Length: 190
Image (cartoon, rainbow, N blue to C red; front, side):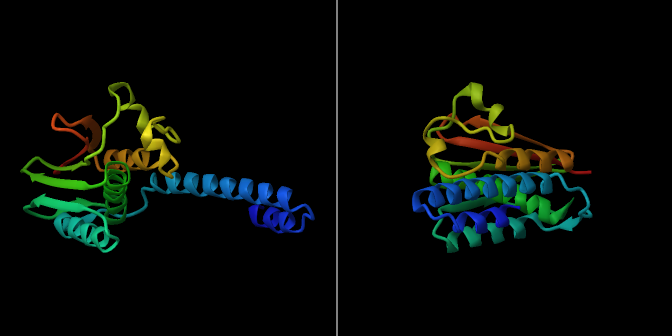
């Protein structure tokens, strides 16, 4: 339907009206696509398997650096983690992209133990107010400060949290005592 409307809009004789219609349709399409992305983040059909989380993080870091982003990685994962590879990749990419987008860099720290795997993604941005730390996980919610000046749809953190929960884990945010916002992904080892 959006494509049909776009074709009809292109036939409008008034250039100003046409531009407004096309802009509205582009916004509608972004909203529809972001909703589908959010729902895909809830998909549980991917089968869990043993995966090398360190290789996954190194791959994401390498991809980010190729795009000129400032991403560092410390720590190590001692053994494979049982999880859904594509979902976990998406979760981590959302966290890292947010850190780079809103805080200029992503500092990833990995801690592994017999009982849990913890991945921390910290940025160098201004952080967010304490009362917003939970609200940013709500679909389409965006902080009204400088973070909202950057293009996005307000779904990335919600998707990341859903993926963490799907793995029996949790995702929290905190303003780091030394500055920046830190996302803490904790995944239990079964």
